[in-house]
Image (tube, rainbow, N blue to C red; front, side):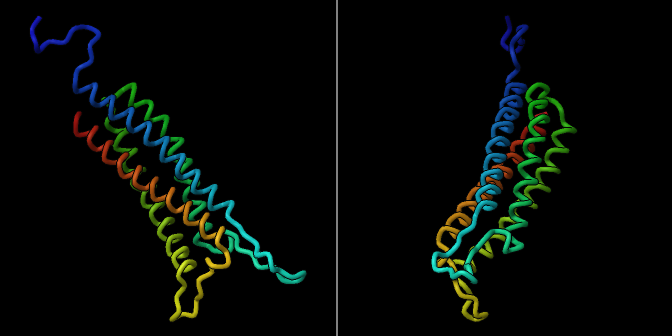
Length: 182
C-alpha cells in the first residue's frame, strides 16, 4: 500500500488533530464550569460576624452588602450555566469535528461570557483591594483586620474566577485553531 493512502478504519492526522482539540475543549469547559461554580459558591457563602457584638448592634459582613459582590456571584453563575449548556455543542464537535458554524457561534458566545466574567471579577477585585488596603485619602479604612475570614473567602473566590477566565481564553484559542484546521 502507498504511504499517502488511508486504510478503512484509520483516522486521518488532520481529523485526529481536530478531534483532539474538541476533546481538549470539552475538558477545559468542564474545568472552567467547576471554577466558576466554586467561585460563585465561595463568594455566595461568604459572611462573618464579629464576636464583640452587643444585643442591639451586630457587626457583620456578607457578600450581598456590596453590589459588586452580588454582580460577581450572578455573573459567575451565568457563565457556569452557559459552560454547562455549551458542553452539548462540545460533544457534538467531538463527534463531528468538521462543524464550523457551531464553532463560530461558540467562539462569539465564549467571548461574551469572557467579557462578563472579567468585568465581574475586576469589579470584585477592586472591592477586595479596598477591603485589604483601604483608601486613606477617601477615609476608607481596611476592614480585613477585623473580617479576616470574609476577606480570605472573597480573595479565594477571585482566584477561581480568574482561573476560569484564563481557561475561557484557552478555549477560544483552541476553537480558533480548530476552525483554521478545516
